Length: 524
Image: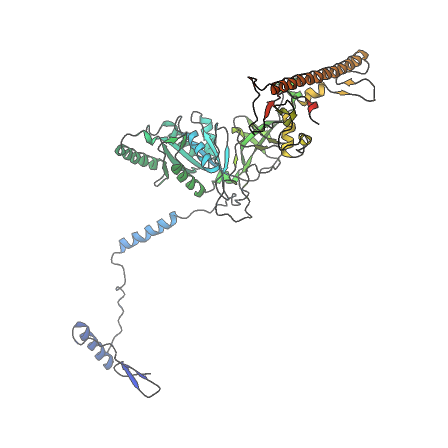
């Protein structure tokens, strides 16, 4: 490889052949060619002077450049902020975020909460009372609270605890005084995230009027909050709930919003009470209705750590000392994160609303309450099958011997069946209970004294009377069953009888007769 004087490259191959590559031909005429010749001549003579123009790359206008630099510095400085440590960083153990739904009366606050709960958990809420905690994602929960607009104290309390405010506005009526009052209260407590929800858009007759109203409301809302604040428009309702697509848009933004921790809340512990319970002894209340009460409060601790030695301020009541703080199982836990899931299924979607009576299981400090609803079990002895000959037969596919023994008492079904048979409380049973120490001795009734012989004899008489009554009831039940059996046997013999018992529907000629008061001696 060699280069000639003209700048051309020569490649010499192994066989001795030389390949020439011509260089770029320079300009031979024009200003550039003249300058190149002049520069080449001066370089050859040695009279060439190296010149550097210091103004070739300088600014054209110094004042304008200074303003641009200062503007860029100010813009970058406005984006700087002091980093705050978010104590809710542990998403698995963090308490749910508080979402306050605020608006004037009859604007659709309750309808909005019912629609959100239906979208998240598929539950239908009838009454909205107190905080409602729902799971919105794999690692996020929110607590919905409806803020009453006719109570200034409630508006103050909600402004102190809100992480996100859904400001409901009646688009047909416009902004009201309660909305501006709440915004002024929120500004003095750190100004959390605010989203606008405009309802009753279905009342506009023309699309032109609707567009004009939306533009005016957006301009006014952005003036009060900030430019670019998020707004949602809800047109109408179906079955007292907003449209699914409109609610879905709102749920997506709620699940994605980022909360910046406020300074005061980040340095003070506080508890939003989900429910409370009075644990004062009933005897103290009966002796003195004005006695000091012991009350238990249940809720998530937010902010910093809460200690027993600290005093707590109960809003509207005063300052009190705490006697005990205990940790309970999470009533609305986040779904198990061991399994990899792409989305939250309906089975994992949970709801915790103790004041609204939603949910089958509620946890207490020392008990678990189970709401069985309308679960009733029909006993097999309450149904009997009698054929046309009048014979009492067992129902097909069942066994008499397992009528009372088929369900274990420790199983859930057995427990419910046993609870269904309870007709009296424990205190009533204790008052009517008797105790016999020796065989053949007098039975001692609860509440009777040992010195009172008359009471002992009366208790024995009562026990004897109860035994006689039970015997009489048993014999009368047997007679009634025998009469009923004879009547059906006679009806079966008469082929042209006008009144026939109802068939059980299986085509074998049997009839079904219900016995609502079946005696216990019928079971084996």
